[in-house]
Image (cartoon, rainbow, N blue to C red; front, side):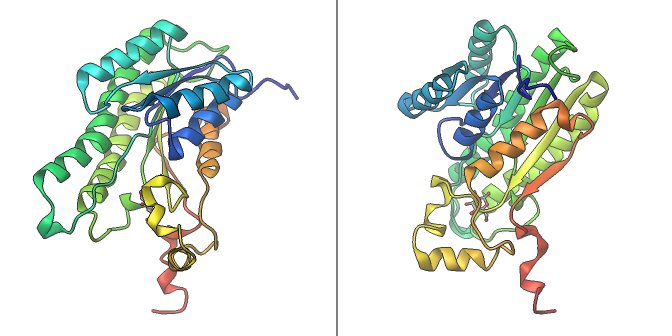
Length: 269
Ligand code: BGC
């Protein structure tokens, strides 16, 4: 067996790469041999910290500031990453936010902001990545695909979520955006897939796990009996980005400890 790393020679861009799931994905791709552009929105320190950790393990990384809901900033971010690395082979469209409110109280601004970041942001980044993949084409020594897009979705692409209509709508939108892109781009040898995380221990859902009572309540929704760790998603992303999964196209990989298995029915119904 060769000791070549699974993503050796590949160049990756991870949006929202400075914290939570994005941070773990950036570190995992770096450890798997990819050069990594770590996108962040405003505070450069956490992004530089991720960059330093990738470099400390012998990898190559840069930080890229951009609001991914802005067409101009996405264009600038891709230009910066491609100027630095020569190309981009892997996009992990990960950046996402929650701004929670009950439906009757939800403001248009709260609705629009979540859709702009979670859904429009993925469209803008996927479009930019696709243009670069098609410009470069397949380089067989690097990958069997011309490029790989991984959309970070959520179990809430299928599980309705009261009090989170904007977020659930954005993730439901990602499901069909991803599948449509996959169908459209597969003939050009671009693979598009999604990861749907369940409850992962990150800042976005801290109130759901930061006390023993909250964690116990959360775990009633997780048949596997533990909360997910960001690394669980990092490992899934490495596999989906590598040629190990070359025949996987348009699939959502649920990494959720069984959250989507209707655990309420285990002793009911
Ligand atoms: C949300 C988390 C939530 C998890 C499971 C994720 O998409 O961002 O806040 O804990 O889904 O419900």
